[in-house]
Image (cartoon, rainbow, N blue to C red; front, top):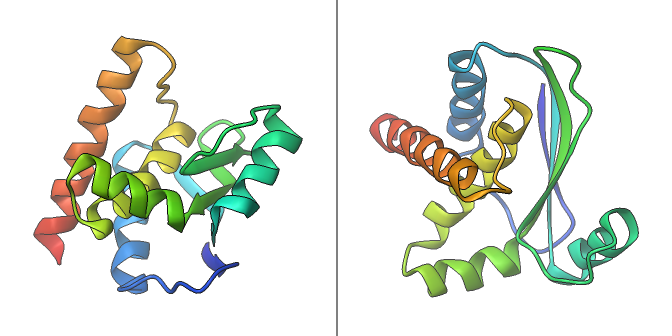
Length: 139
């Protein structure tokens, strides 16, 4: 099950298509979905979590808490809509593209992909781009 929760003035467009896309991504990576809770929030909300749980006093666009067991995916993914908007401008992409990138980024972490080293970050970006293309072809 995938739940979308809103802690700010924002509503995800095309929830059903996004749900289907996430489920297909998880299946393509040979994992099974138990439950993912997405929480769309503002910078202040996510900054508090970043400081409290990760000891990072910085703004970020996404934080994922992974409760997965083996190939069974469970977790909470917090997304700052404000940060996504700013990043979309900085990267010269649409808000929707950047939002979809962070939506799938958290899922890919649950599927075992990392982004701490340059090589891992490149592999993560390749996977993100692959699944973003899949979403576009199904819209």
